[in-house]
Image (cartoon, rainbow, N blue to C red; front, side, top):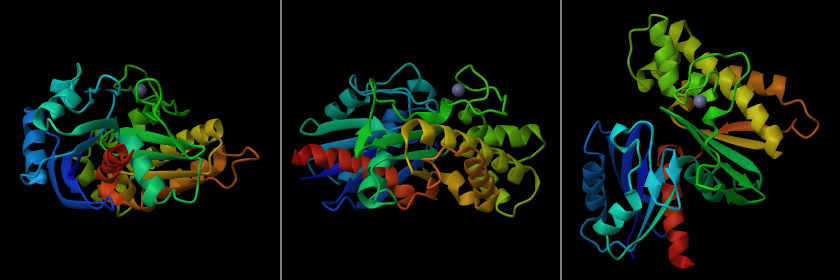
Length: 297
Ligand SMILES: [Zn+2]
């Protein structure tokens, strides 16, 4: 049995073979390609397979997706914006494999629920703060995927106090303030000379200047949105993954202050926001779980 996982993230593409214990072996990764996205995926998957016959493939994709149709349309991949039938394409590549698709945030939630920070709770949410924002919801111990697979796509929750223009066409969404791409754009508008999310996070870690201010805004927006979502879903834990998590106190202090200020209902005082325990293999592990659970069903 050879199980593979594919990550179509907002900041990278990655693939790996999945061990029986859901370990991720020999991760292959590239930045999100500007063109030839499926060709690059095929190269990574064939490298991860190492010539073995693939029996199952799990795909974690940035949204939006259409889970029933097996189609992805991630914002960061222009050639796929009108929809790419990734499940059909993967079945052509590996005719013997069962192929399973879920939102990247759902895969983070699955992985953290099984092996990471969510193992002790049954009502929780995972949020990815990467180039874009995504998320996945666990209610009563079950993963919520929604009608089309996009439940948990939390980036477009409105955040009071912000009016930034969002890629969805609206204003004041969490995505418009707290995603890596939005934080970089805001910092550049203030005169910061850098270009990437990784540069911004690194520059912010010293705790001063425009990069720190950009991630401070992101932290506040995340905290306000988390307080709203926690009240809606009656949950006591939010796990935060993605590169912004590495920014340290410049992000986490305003985030926790916003949670403390806004999560005031009687059932919310225990609400905690913690970093992902699985780090940068979390999405592959979640996609691997999708595939493995289908194999054992
Ligand atoms: Zn929006």
